[in-house]
Image 1: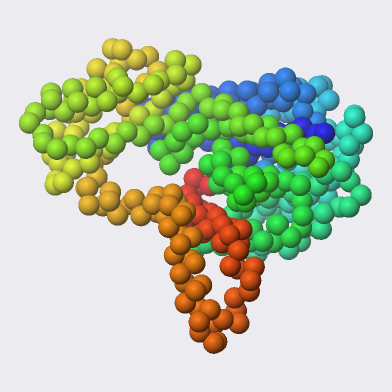
Image 2: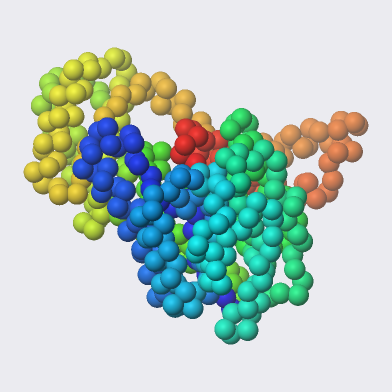
Length: 404
């Protein structure tokens, strides 16, 4: 049995530029929150006595790091080493090219630009092969998956580290070592520790090809709990995986349907009641965005006044809740945005539709030869739907390139 932590996209040194422009005090707290989240990760590694920690890219927000960030990171790696825990690190598209750090030693292994494999033997005797690569430039347009070796048959476990994303309809996906899920699957690794997408996400049905997401959200595109995985692998047994939330600051968006606007006071009162019914964790700081769903235009002066008055009301009751942004969205556009969500949720109708398409194709003499018996099985159809969902999710994740 081996136990390890999979994390990625730490982004130490992120300036939280957008937040700086809105509230510099909160922006400073957010910068510190990333360090606090990483401290929680290190504390957890030591508490669980893990064998090693995998950091799958973008530990820094930039390839030009401040000396204080380097000192902080070196101290945390030393804590792991003192506890007998190894660290394996790859660089991503943000912190590319950092291969000469002085923490690259017997306890901390930094992969270089070519795919290579490290062999680790745990104190209990298990052998693990860990394969990975780092970015030496900001963009990698080729798939690096084709350079990974087949599973090492001599070791007990083989793990891959990969910073990138599956190739999608988005042009931006081609810049980050685009890969096919099938290319990873056919290598038969026991686990793929992925980085680059900031939301925890599985690319296969059993969770062995997975993004852990970032440990601290940086904007309203990265809402909800963030953290890392503690994973236990045992030969011939199902994987055990625990998600550990560690983000001190959480970005939250609340949508509110505005039927009629009679007065500013009434709208503020309605929004405040919406806040009161939410469940807030007293140990966390929340950055809030209200999205008002309307049928027609909304007075921008009123919107600004509502935001200012509501923030004052919030500050009287909540110490760690801040209204950062208020926006307006038309209801018609909102309905259109539900399409991707519906595609993700209704698998049964997708399976029925897929069956209908196959039945029609099988009756066509030219098309029928492209359909095998395997393609008619429920397992194959489920796999196709899962792949489609992954593509949709990946497209939903792609936004501002700097987010990744």
